[in-house]
Image (cartoon, rainbow, N blue to C red; front, side):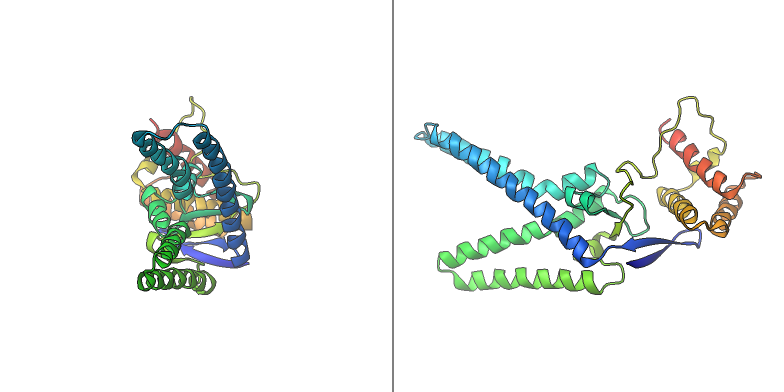
Length: 271
């Protein structure tokens, strides 16, 4: 299992597991099968509707064409974007194979990052491939050949990048500045920087709000890595830097201090 070290603003590297290529391929295959069966089910339903509907009216034919486009192509094209935004970086395939899309710094990816990845997804190039076949069928072999070359070049480029790059990034990841990491099977979708805090919680360090979202993500990543490895020195180094930067004085242990900081942030960020 490859591991990538991501530097944080506190000059402390946190580690993330980069999944094997087969795991990412399996995730993609699961998502493809989900979309395929969705298409087959919707196509069967629409076929039944068409067979029982009076479509002699041109206006009705036009309306039904838009119904087909919205019900069939809409969810298929938007599947990955909607799933990753709604579940903090996971499609169904990624959930099953314990993968997640995160920012290069280890934090939750932004909407703009999900959109960049989506714009360079395989589904768009499959559509281009279908258009290529339609051009060939119509006799436009030059256009068909060009589109086919574009699709093939894209797929080989993506595969080469995932296999050879240190962080396992495809083209969409490189442009969006995201990485796909392997997570623990028991990790919940809700396990981001956000956590449940009681309504009567009393924040101890309001200075935490001076830090950026990137810093908060770094604190959580450092805390999780330090706990996982039992690395007291890592937690202590981060705690010292934060105390110095925010001018905080406390005798709290490094692990407890970082944990309280995250709770304070969660409480204050929604008030």
